[in-house]
Structures are given as structure tokens and as C-alpha cells.
Image (cartoon, rainbow, N blue to C red; front, top):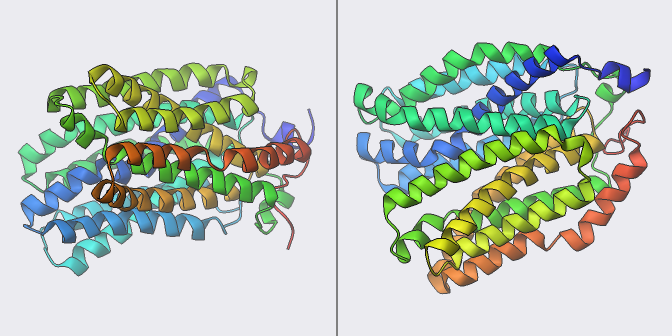
Length: 400
């Protein structure tokens, strides 16, 4: 075993330890997007902020995550993923505790949101770079995405207890405590294989394949955000109970965790040119069904399809970025742009709902998910094959 294969070899025990660290890092990195509704509700109830002021907290949180991810993509592989992971966790804990102090000025809460976004971006950079360096990035992303969902579910389930113990702003205390408790397990990221010096010091510049991946990724994120942001509203419109809608989301999360683990185990046998378009189309179709639902069965099918396909497509998008660039910088950059697309999805979806209908929203979201595939996917797959991911320099990087 020579070259990059030797560098990226992982024994079984180290593989499991790395998967643990990646799962925790993934869950913490995408925590803000998942608990944002609870954060906004806490600001409105605990600090008596208006909906627009509290909503801007969410905007600054996601956009700072996206912008800092793009900035961090310029870091070379010599910057330790363990160091940036613990720094990010520390900033997430600090910003949450500062928000929980109860100061109600917009500058204070928005500044805390920016700090939280920076912490998430550092965690996201560590997650992407460590997984990209592994022997089978598709497998590691599928498994760690599923593990990250377990972290998110644990945090969401703990929020009611934190609120009862610490008041309306207890959600921020709960986030800080849980991140502080599980962060030490991210030390297992040290088992991520080191990268060849040449790749680590190359300057990042997106090639045609990288640009194609970027368009596919952002389109999918934009479309899924447009549809999913109003899925609960659609459920209520067809007279589903709030308990059923919440239960269905839980089922979707649990099923996507199981599917992620199963697909992760079979990753080497799955062809990228089949699984990637299939899951992206499934994400669009799931969102379309959820938005156009006419009864509980169609709504249930849409939600389950959406959850499972969106999780799998995200893993294979990250894996495609790793196939182009094993340093993780292309994945970090595209991941930041992905969050920007996700942040824009909700307001664009709102405009469609205000001026058209939920059906048109579902159609628009589905189109956004798949519109780049006929043009971008052949370019992406061709460059991945040409890059020779088993030992040749990654084509997602160019020396400049």
C-alpha cells in the first residue's frame, strides 16, 4: 500500500473512534439550523422581542455560519481539525451562555448569533476535513450524518427540561451544557488520517467539476428549504393534529438514521452516478408530495421520502466534494454556500405562498432540487473519474 492509500488507511478500531468524533462534530455543527425555532421562541417569550427582531437572530446565525465556512475553506490542511473542533465547541458554549444572561438589546443577541455561527463554522470545517481524508468518505459521511441526527434529537428532547429548570431562556443553557458534555469525545478526530504535504499546501480554486457540484448542491439546498419550511403549515391546512406532525418528523428522523447507517455500511457497493441523482430527485419529490398533500397518507409519504433522501443526498454531496479534494476545502466552501442557499429558501418560499399556493411552492422546490442535474452531474462525474481518487492529486484543487 503506497501513496495516499497508505496515508489514508484506517484500522477498524480507529475507524469506529473517528466515526464517533465525526458524529458529534456533525451534530454540533448543524445544531443551530435544527434548534432555531426554539431559540427564536425563547427570545420572543423570555426577552419579549418582536418576531422580526428574533427572526434576525436566526438570520445572523445561519448566514454567519455560511460566510465563515467559506472563509475557513481557505485554511490549509496543516491546521488541526481537533483544534478547530474544540475552538468551535467553546465558542458555541460561550455564545449560548451569553445569550442566556438575559440582555435584550438587538446588538447583544445578534452578536451572540454571529459568535454561535462562527463556532458552528469551525465545527463544520473540522467535520468536513476529517471525513474527506478517510478511506471511504461516502461511508463516513453517511454514518456520521446519522450519528449527528442522534445528537440533534437528544438536544431537542432535552430542551423542555432545560426550559423548566432555567426559565424561557433555558434553551440556550441546555445547548451550552450538552455541547460541553459531549465535546470531549471529539478528541477522537485525531484518528483522521493526515494528508500529503503537497495537497495540504495547494491553493484552492474550483474547477469545472467543483462549480458543477456547487450548483447542484446549492440548488438542492434552496429547493429543500423552500418546501420544508412550510411543511408543518401544509399539515395543519389538511387538518392533521400538531401531535401527529411532530410524531411524523420524529419517525422521519429515526428512519433516516437507520437508513444512513445501512447505506453507510454498503457505501462501497453503491454507484455515485445512481445514488446521487436518485436521492436528489427523491428530495424534490418528497418536498413536492408534502406541499401538495391531499390527505394524511400523501403527507406522510412526502415527509418520510424527504427526510431519508435529503440525508443521503447530503452525505453523497459531501462525498463528491471529498472525491474532488481530499483536504476538505472544497467541501467546506460548498458547505458554506449550501447554508446560504438554505437561508434564502424560507423567504423565497414565503413569497411563493403569499402570491401563489402550496402546490406551486412544492413544484418550485422540486425544480430547484433537480434543475442542475442534467447539466452539472455529467461534468461532476467525469471529473471525479478523471481525478483518479485512488492516489492521484485531487482535481478539485489547482496550484495557483
